[in-house]
Image (cartoon, rainbow, N blue to C red):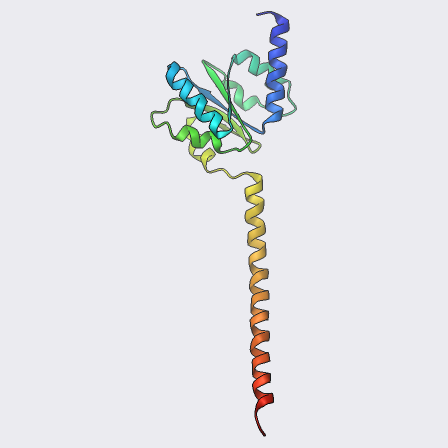
Amino acid sequence: MRKEDKGVIISQLADTIKQYGHFYLIDTTAMDAAKTSELRRKCFKAGIKLVVVKNSLLHKALMGMDVDYSPLFDSLKGTTSVMFCETANAPAKLLKEYKDGVPALKAAYAEEGFYVGADQLEALATIKSKNEVIADIVALLQSPAKNVISALQSGGNTIHGVLKTLGERAE
């Protein structure tokens, strides 16, 4: 491969990393063509971009980024495929469908955190996005205010009923 071609591939990888917020490094060595094709179809349906990369080119692309991706460098051995996604837990949920551990998770960068090793798959599957966490916090903050307003409204109706009854009573 010519040096110019490598430069183009490195810049494309860097652009893809910037475009998607999260990516997973997986090992697809034990997969045959049919299983790989099935995985690609599942990724496409889930909105995940699956790319087979050369480790040295991905390493150079990660080195040129603003974020320090050095915790992932040790995982760049053997056959590496990268799953790029917008939703942090989507690839983990897809990988959990495969019970035999193939494809295997090498490492991941999700929600600005590093997850190295196949044992991190469960943690990645349960991770919440920033928007989900914000929605949970807003819901928790709204709940007490709704309870106070509800109590005030019911109390006002009770007082109104008592005053109306007292007003209608003959002296």
